[in-house]
Amino acid sequence: MQVRNIIELDDEIFLKDAYLMAEWLEQERITRFISEGEDISDKIRKSLRYTSCPIVTHLFCNGGNFYMIKHNGRSIGYLKLVDKGNRKAEIVVVIGDRAMWNKGFGTEAVRLAMNECFFRLRYESLMAKIMVGNEGSHHVFQKVGFHYDGEIRGLSIYSMKLDSFLALAA
Image 1 (cartoon, one colour):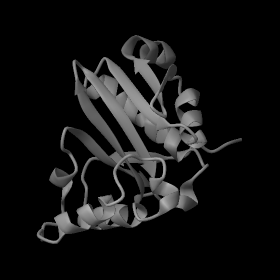
Image 2 (image 1 turned 90 degrees about the horizontal axis):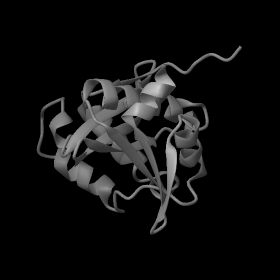
Image 3 (image 1 turned 60 degrees about the vertical axis):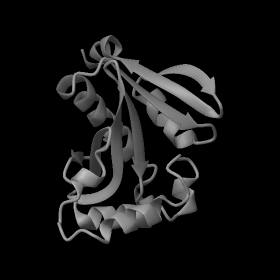
């Protein structure tokens, strides 16, 4: 019997989470498949220098929703739902804690995000852009039922429409 990975998406980003993200984003094994830019870790740290507030959610929610992925209360990654207009969103998932890779946490995070996206935020479409070669992410989005839409400039495009999600959830 397989035990399901229990995680949560926390929409409060604490100072310690931001520093943890900066640490993750210094690791080439993590950043090689994301398009945040090589200096994202430095940018995060610079933005934190001038805050004494323990909650820094506002620094991460530009243009969408941002969540820490937590397992047993411990941050293991982050997830963004970026508003693309016309009731469409793009999902970005990063499991930053390498000890948590290949354990199903990314899959569970995407499932939670789909519920958030379609039920609470009322989007009609969710898409993911996955770099060619990122086999783990390709597997996650295929496993949860996203449709492969093709490849553009080294990115594989996956999508999930509300009606498809509802059919899966039924």
